[in-house]
Amino acid sequence: MNPILVFCEQRDSRLKKVGLEALGEARRLAGGAGCEVVGIVIGASIASLAEELARHGASRVLVGEDPGLTRYSSETYTAMLGDAATRLQPVAILMGATAMGKDLAPKLAARLKTSLAQDCVALQMESDGSLLGTRPVYGGKLRAVVKAVTPALQVVTLRPNVFSPIEPKPASGIPIERLALQANPDRPRATVRDVQQTAGSKIELTEAGIIVSGGRGLKGPENFKLVEELAAAVGAAVGASRAAVDAGWKPHSYQVGLTGKTVSPQLYIACGISGAIQHQAGMSSARTIVAINNNPNAPIFKLATYGLVGDLFEVVPLLTEEVKKLKAGS
Amino acid sequence: MKIVVCVKQVPATESKLQLTTDGTDVNRSGLSFVINPYDEFAVEEALQIKERLGTGEVTVLSLRPHADQKPEEALRTCLAMGADKAVLLSDQAFDGADTFTTALVLASALRRLSFDLLLCGKQAVDDDGSAVGIQVAELLGLPHVAVVNKLEINQGARTVLAHRQIEGGIEVVEAPLPALITCQKGLNEPRYPSLPGIMKAKQKPLEVWTRDTLGLPAETIGVAGAKQRVVRLEPPPPRPAGRIIGGDAATAVKELVRLLHEEAKVI
Image (cartoon, rainbow over all chains, first blue to last red; front, side, top):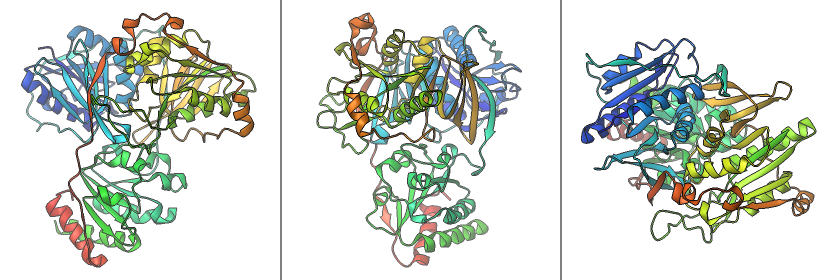
């Protein structure tokens, strides 16, 4: 059976966790089908990352290293991955549904004239080698199970935090090959001129294992510090509802929901968020959901694993203290 | 500057969705439809660019996604907001498209229109595919910048400088025109159509193009040319029933922390 290609994103020579999750999932899919898992990493100064891919399940690694590749380029990455796909004829190309993955995958799929399944939360290999992808649609109200018509090649992006990486294992003797830089200078291209870090939350929402979000119930921007203190205590990223963002309390990069980010953390704590359908679209796939709200009829309680009806100005500081006590004791 | 904006008509967010009998699609009858929210940012940006430059033309382009939809209504709304003309791509042969055949038909229509800049939303909130805009650019051999929340046009140099959201920051991306931009919330505040705008929109041109207009072979488009098919739609797995933790705040919080630690094992 033809191989599965896994593109593992790196920025500043650091691999994204979701790339390792994709390798783990590819390994699981390949196990049944008996096919090779080829890890691909592209960038500048990335030679040391090849072994990490091998340790996380790649049976072969392609390294597209070039000093000119310090920043992402949709055109160059598409050309390099397209070339690898043409040579290796994979059954599927997997990558994380990150800003980069969701930008690259559609371009690559269009160039290869093949099927694309974005933001998958489950994958299944059929006996004929075709891949079924399950992806949330209609803001998470439904899930679509999709498959490529023919031939079987699918380009697939995987939602971060949903799939599991394998236990890293020693990786000696894994073939590491060079992936040649493919760059057609005549092709018009978008060029990244600068990358600016946004101030604020240190942990990126879409990658966070735990998220504490605040909403309208906080009553004002100054009260976000309650949410931030709880987040710091529990080691979480900070999110916000649309109401809080539209009120100008937090920038849009904090927004969880339909017109914001879609997150899948292990734990989501909603403080003073009623849980309108637009908010649920962004967080309903969290494993454990805690709702703190003074309105017992708030829709968020229908979703919550644990609900606490009460005044968040009393409950949240108490929760922060209890979490600190737990952490101090463990 | 000539700008074409691709818009999609989607079911309103609050819609209660029901599946068709074969379970592979959403039953459209009885649903109300709106302009995809991200496409509104694209329309607004086009209008603001035209207003800023004091010259130009804004064309809105929409592909009818399903026989039971009337995207004319969405296009009329765009015209009422201030767009100059509209083109609707409507043909049974387009039905059942996936992202690739949708992009293929849009790209084919765009080859018949002249433009310096293409704008569309970063994703449609029905299929949530985040793909068609980028694929249109690829099929036309144009550069794209996706998920943009700030856009500057340099008319002299014929370039755009776009801020695009990435994890923990932004990428500042430059591209030569013509280019395609997919629009993210934060780019602008879309206007509401004014009453005079609504009156004027009735007189503005809205052309309907079919497969014949585009000269596309039927087997390459719609469900016939699609690279992907939907096996089924299903509701998300039900969440296990939650529980409300009662008692006074201090007791409830202690119990919550115990449950998170011992039962859910997440802290």
